[in-house]
Image (cartoon, rainbow, N blue to C red; front, side, top):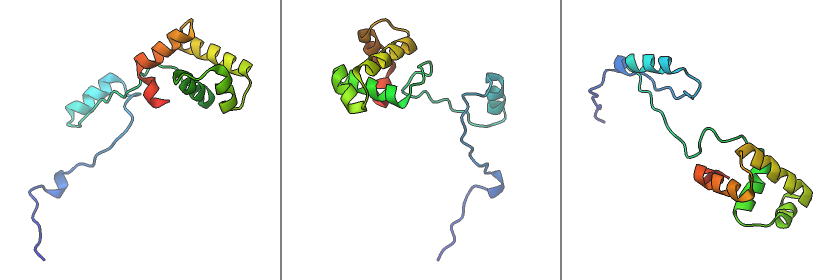
Length: 116
């Protein structure tokens, strides 16, 4: 079997390190870039300013944006309608909106509907 010859010297290859750069200060990112590291910033589909949602809030929001009424959501999630109403109030507070219509608009505007 023939030996494959490479044009790249093995001592010139740097390992690739993938890490979350969201907590790295900008001046350190610039320093890494100047030292020859490839710094790639990736914007994901969801706006980073969106609130953290609990699993129950996420499920209720998904069902609500799909058009299900509170009674059906309550049955599916296994809670009372009153709890669903409280969850909707919590979601409106987290998204800083006043109505459920504004909540749905904000979900679609931010792209969160794809991640529910």
